[in-house]
Length: 230
Image 1 (cartoon, rainbow, N blue to C red):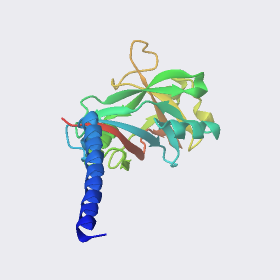
Image 2 (cartoon, rainbow, N blue to C red; image 1 turned 180 degrees about the vertical axis):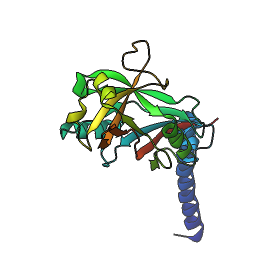
Image 3 (cartoon, rainbow, N blue to C red; image 1 turned 45 degrees about the vertical axis):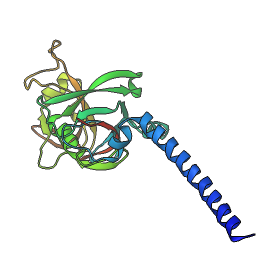
């Protein structure tokens, strides 16, 4: 083959390669265009003010998950016979503090006939999660400390426990209690007009004065599902 024909053959080959590259690039541009800005928000870190949707799991002091929006984890725990509450994903604004004392979230309780109840996330817990998502990206996971520097222990007298049908003489340290909590400090179980939300506590001490119940949770594991830039 002469030099001229070799040159023409080489040029023809590169034209075909360039044509393929151009075609692939065109397809890529079309895909990106159809996605809008979602692919950018997926790789960009979350900033204060962004709207964020997360999956989250709360853990008790023994390190066991007791509430989750992770369907796979929920099914695993139910299959193994462990008690766990199922909730939905949490939508929040990054780095925005909660004004009220309680943020209610819906939970599904399989052990109670599949009932739906309201569960209380406390202000410091919600704020810790809201602050923690800043700098994260879609799909990223993080462990968030919830009770640092915060005491959430309450002492219940024998009469207090009796009003919610709990016999103090039968309680043991380490036992879990499901109690109703309210934004009103002096609310009682007999006040039927008061809105109360579930809260899982653990008995840490039993004294002559009553039972000390810790309603704090050490940490949560969160995963960013999506975010929207503001």
